[in-house]
Length: 224
Image (cartoon, rainbow, N blue to C red; front, side, top):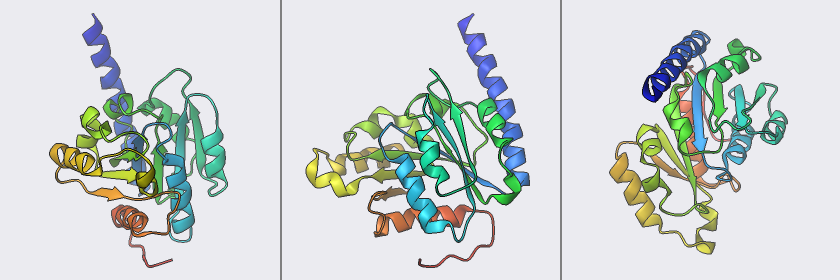
């Protein structure tokens, strides 16, 4: 009986995700499902993104976490459009949770919605939330085998971020191996190497350019 139960859960999730997607597209919101492990730098990336784009885009965030609202509180300093989802023991966000969070956002005011998923490289991959794209995030402090060990995230990502490049000289990390694993799993998806903490560098600008180019609005983009 286990398989039908799982199938029914995923079917219901996909139905709600379709409702989410329709609402987001109707409002012209480009939606990102940001997936990465705890400590990879998701919140720091979003803080830097707000700093870089707040004068050009209106960005909202749905922040998923097990218990605390600390990530949401950090991001709320940069935007009035931040909603917290506490999952308790849940290891991922589902479409219904996102649907409820969306009711606390004025979608018509947003250009971009980032769903900062629970810190996990496995469970979030299998649940459609209604997003346009999945963004995978890895970091130099996690180990160079993470892409190979989590192939489904790499394969489903529209862009892959490799964060904390400023720490490479201090950690044991085979960057060539990591790059090779990514190319083997998903040769057509861009890999952007950056430092979210030290965001005054070319890699971070590549992320910004990728994000802006995917927003479905005619927006001017130029150097800060």
